[in-house]
Image 1 (cartoon, one colour):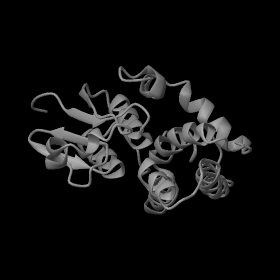
Image 2: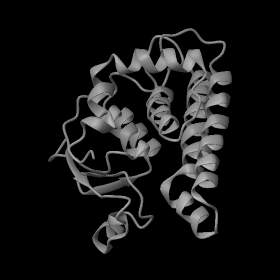
Image 3: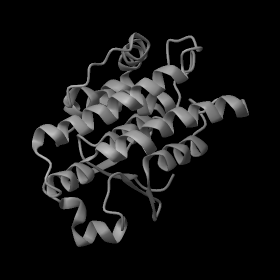
Amino acid sequence: MHGEPVLHGYFRSTAAYRVRIALNLKRIAWRDVFHHLRDGRQRAPDYLALNPQGLVPALEWNGAVLTQSLAICEFLDELVSEPPLLPGNAVARARVRAFAQVIACDTHPVQNLRVLQRLRAAGLDEAAVTAWARDTIADGLGSCDALIAGHDGPYAFGTQVTLADLCLVPQLVNARRFGVDVRWPRLLAVEAACLALPAFAKAAPERQPDAE
């Protein structure tokens, strides 16, 4: 490793939260650069030069700029093998990735700030916007609960933390923020097991220097 990695993020970004957990699990030190999403700092020209999508996180690593949280987490997993974020078995890896993608691809993107702002611009009032986010998150978490129904804990897919857990815990934070009835005991048990680990606890939004 050459130089200190730089993580571009925001305390409330669930995608950046996933990457913070991964960095902590891999015991990789990094420097934070914060971009206040509600103030639109992620669309500043200097940041768009790093990440043309104008989203966080982005990770600067040895002259490379990496974007998209799942891609970053898998990069870190390939770089530092312990602890692994994906199982050794191909079917098990596919199941973990599927769970993670339910959240990162199908749930979080359609309730994030950019989408909610578009709903407001389209004329929906605040109650309707919140209901959109709440229903979207509840549907996604219900699917996640079903996907791990046959797997023992303490984590989503057994005794090893995986990429699934890195996605679940931040999404549960969002769920509560939007008033979702978090009614899935198995998901709550996984969350409790994860939050007992320092890597998850240190990555929590409220513990970040830019927390409001």
